[in-house]
Image 1 (spheres, rainbow, N blue to C red):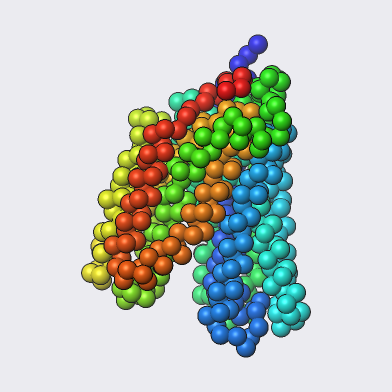
Image 2 (cartoon, rainbow, N blue to C red):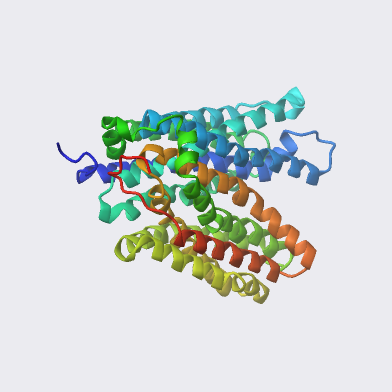
Length: 433
């Protein structure tokens, strides 16, 4: 019998493109909400007579709901992805995200229906969180499992490109509306990116429906010994609980460090270092473009020199740059600030891009979707949702940015320690461990 885990030449490219398109759309929808939460939701979906800061905090609270829904999405779609296939789970998550995002664009405001408005907003944000929680693991597996052994890190990084690409599209769409008419944004203009997402979802569905199922899953389905003995979550926790914990430990910088070097750094630069918002936003935008190319480059290096080795180098670079990235803000030099932001994003790309393959191969194929989804989404809820808050609390407590830099260094050291102990499973593995 032919080896079903050996992909054809065209299959990896199709799977990689489908992963990139799908995750870009998913993250665009996720970040469109984040952008709107910071700009208009505080005034549109909450009482107009409350303090604007309280309204903004309430708006960000609805944003946080998405983070805490993501682990549930990882469990639910991990189950179906390991039982029924990666492709069917990914089509479902894309539809869920598209419908929820489109419905946000149709919501009545607080002035129209009162407290029903924020309630509906929270429900739809929860659906978004479940969808993106189930999306990442499947997209990574479709790309990694469809690729030849010597190119798995490179093709796996295409799923990672969706995050910065989706963020750029989201902020860019609101930027265009603001440039056209800033007042329009607060009337009905904010609805346009949400409603337009349905067109992107249609494109994503066409691409995703044409891609073949993962060859590794097809091979596992033919060999019933490779199927989970019970529910995939129970089987994962029974046979791979160490890998789950190590997977969470590998990810503090990959998922939490991003918000330290973007969200917190932006707030610190404007409020404490006196840097203009325009300079910080322009620098972060340029850094995001650099990150897109750096992600592919570092993933290519991972296939050439070893994936874990490149991720370790990236983590070490993050630790080295942790303090300088904040100190350079004090200089006020636009050139130095933008250069440092770009350097940090290259270091982050060396961590984030290749990490897809590392996580995918920490689990045997029969529970792989569940395993990487649980690890990634739990880490996202813990480190992604709480890192900016922890940084703010540390700075308020100590009055020194050094404490934040130390936190980032500790996150990098924990990631390195867990990475050094991460297990690796073959795509052809069929027997329980």
